[in-house]
Length: 270
Image 1 (tube, rainbow, N blue to C red):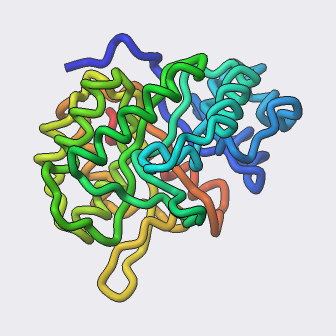
Image 2 (image 1 turned 90 degrees about the horizontal axis):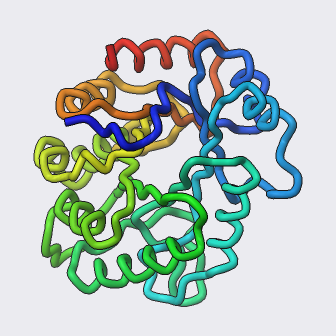
């Protein structure tokens, strides 16, 4: 199976202001991803303009749409994501299968959804509403969870597969989040990968984390564990991913260590 209809992105890294010079000088960075909420469409950072001038795709990644929330979609956030996409000439945007806000409170965290028909109906409606405003395709990412809601009516793979079928969205598969969920809530990685419509795969996230008090935390502040690279290999055995992106959000290592992680990703892809 090959996802030949989507852009070939290659191997990339998450652009952050703290490592802007690092990202510019790292060898063989094929694309980057930026947190959309941190970008002002009318004042794109010089580093991102430089990368765009080099022909490096820059993909906006939203963290606040709260597409799974039961409250009305905040269209100002959708419109901001759309404006960032246009400012960066991005081929797609992304956000998460989660909720962020409820009852007037903002969790400041990507909260997993209950895997029920009712929750899926709400998610589908919000995704379809967002798609009407966004100027480019929307990819949606599986999130890491520390707890699992009771009363699940389907597996996470089935939930995502039906979401794709009903909205025609693309998939952003985070194998680090899959690893976290396997550790924390018993998700079966093989069933997850076998159930997903991988022909809709836009690209893949990898990242590091750490175990604390018996739970695995997807920190984006540690090196990738071998098990995450192993899951990337399992995914690659099923599909040729259009792109794989390394996320790092804190405790940034020397350039050489980031370059080594990108090389490890390329080795798995090869």
